[in-house]
Amino acid sequence: MNNNDAYRRPSMSSSSPSTSSSTAITCATGPMTFSASDPDPDIAAAASVDALLANELNKLSFQERESINEEIHGVDVRNLGVEETPQLLRESFQQLNVELEQIRPERVLFDRSQKLFGSTTYLNTEEFRIMFLRCDLFDCRKAAIRLCDFVDLVHELYGDVALRRRAYLTDMTELERRMLLAGAYQVLPGRDRAGRRLLGSIAFDAPKSFSMQSRLRLSLYCILSVLEDVETQRKGVISVSWWHNVTVDDFILRGKVHKRMICFPMRLGALHCCIPSEYSGSSTQNNNKINPGSSNGVVLSGLSEIIKAMFVLSIGPKLRPHFRMHTGSAVECMYALQSFGIHSDQIPVNISTGRLKTKQHSKWLQLCQLKEDSLKKYGYKFDRIIECPNNKDILFGRGRPIMRHPGNAIMRNIVQSKLEEYSNSRSKKESILVTWDVVRLLKGKYGARFLKEENGENNGLGWVEVSNDTARSKVRIAFRDARTKILKSAEMETANNTATINTAKDNCAVDSTNTKRKGDATTVSLLSSNIAAIPFRKIDSQVQHNDSSTSAFLAMNGNQSTNTGKRPRLCQTYFNFDN
Image (cartoon, rainbow, N blue to C red; front, side, top):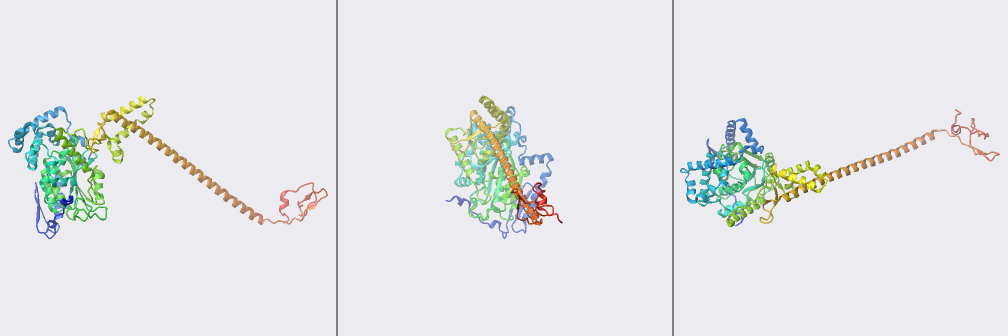
């Protein structure tokens, strides 16, 4: 069976204008019905949704709206959480256990997990329960209710096995694994500007056999994998939904999925919905891996407002202020995401063709498989491997992504500030002390880790922390590169100045030569014209005197002078003053 068979396009009859059926989307304020026979149901739906959003935003104070806006843009996210202390953690675990015991008689499945597996279930571990505490900012009552709701959901999806351990990839069906491998749900590479992980959902028309339970299984697996990171538990995640050609049947099902995901132990900082109207390429036919049957891979005209209504009504009142919708071309959607601290390289969609990128996603799945194999075989987690570095970490390697990493930028700034001290070191020992100071500063003040791609156990699928000596070597190379850059810059500037001076000299020489030649020609021309205008008198043949001398001088009357004793003035020789 071809992998693309899973993405065959269903019939469009449900969204045809000639269909008289209606679709109801319910929310806390009541049902909203969209009838395909209405002249323009999108306008009415959009008006109702916008009114709902405006009403809920008006209920918030100015400080609350500003806090939500900053969280969406990734500004000052670290202050949104609670400062964790050993005493707070100890008291919170105790209080959470008390709350769970109080509601245990009412929550049948949680009670079942305690009776069947007792202390061996992962539900009782502090590592698992702290995710719910951090999600609800250590409100133990809310965390207990969320945990019991989560138990109800995972039991519905996997049965009793989900009460004992977390679900594995092997617990999924063949269709679910194929959909996951195709990139329908992705953990995107890197983080946003605030250091939060990114979850990607590529919306498309899935086959009817891809039910709501299957969608929840894939979402649950991706989210729990991301929540293994402590920083993600504290700061939350960002969800990016990219919509291809989707009909009404599919996004109504997605709305039901959104409602069931509310019990997941994650803080959603922002929910971005991107609906591209076109791609920059002229044609994307047969290039869209998600939906090969679509002509251009974009959402059909007239459905964007209904999709907005589905999102707003399904995510609940708590998350609605965090929702942002982006429309326009694919490039415009990318630019909109960049304003929220999400780089365009992190979105797994080719903006020219609409084709889905799965290279990084495949590497992530391989790492997840290695972790599960290690847990099954050896009974412990693959904790040595770091799947996604933090923004403060310093990465080894080359290339634009490494140079652009925030931690590497911090290191370069510190190295630049201490470059003079390093250059003035009179011995090798002093230069080594400077590099150690930088390592201690990065690790102590900034909490940075020096990470290098692991090519042994996981074949480059993750990162490992290096030793302090290797970290100092990285700093030493940074000093060398900074000094080399300055020297090259100085040499280039000197070469440019020399070239400028030489060019100026050459220009001056050329101008001088041209001026001189121009002056000579003018002088010759003037002399020629003046001489031509002077009246010359013909001089007769020279007369030889008795003393063998000759005279070519004229007397005042114009006759040849016979007086050789006194030479007349030169002007008297050439010019005629008779007149």
